[in-house]
Length: 359
Ligand code: PMV
Image 1 (cartoon, rainbow, N blue to C red):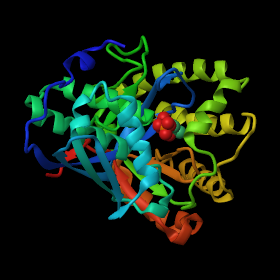
Image 2 (cartoon, rainbow, N blue to C red):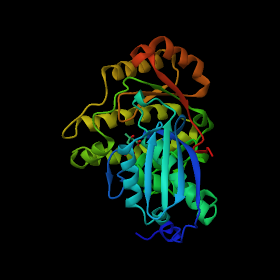
Image 3 (spheres, protein in one colour):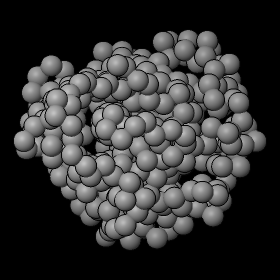
């Protein structure tokens, strides 16, 4: 696999005494057109589009020092976490040809999420992208800083290898991951920014995450993707996703909220329908997920407020709405929706600007 990042990788000797600490915060993202089903090495079966979030972040620090052999420790919320550490170590060892200098370093990773552990929000997109960006910064201390848009593309490429949806977290506002003839420069190997291709209404969009359950999901997304291989509806799904990409890109550009709402809700329900018709089948929605969906649709019908829902691979409901509707929608959440949330919990998030340097 010869590619530009492989040939550019720093393959020299790490100088004696090389040590320090880097830190980055990277956000989670919420997909509108969903990635569900993959092939080869983290190649999506269809393109996906997401909003980059702002408040749901992973904050990651890597302490590094020159060592005789590769050393690795991972701490989550201040405690050593060998299970999560093993996942990151596996990624590093699988792709060490891109980061050969790690074999001369001892790394201590400390990570923390700004959203509660018990919120059922998947953290792989934020944590893997934060980790990759920290690693790239260590590399830049060895080779000199890389600049320009290529840096984000490279961060997206490596984040994708660690966790598919993480490829989209590195870009501000919105990102598209997966090759499509509808968007020049799009790729299966990394995401691209949609920041300059969307109407201003989407640049300040809000996402209220309604916490229906804080439990860890019963089926991992890795297992869910794999089940798409035997799913009889897979070919129809991939064709529909491509059509939705085309129509959503046009709606995002035009600020067409009706089409946006229609595609976003349909995508969320298709994702869960695919889970229900895989073999073995599984259901990640809870009764309160459906109550919330019904309430949201009824409120939209009655008040003509352009709000809509989407779902990730779990029971929580993401309520999406324009910033200009915030007061009205937040009143609705407090009066009608929090009763369906565990301990009345919800997280007020909004479209954000991507990763931020912490150190
Ligand atoms: O990145 P993964 O492998 O955890 O898969 C994410 C899949 C969904 O979150 C359900 C959809 C998406 O596009 O983010």
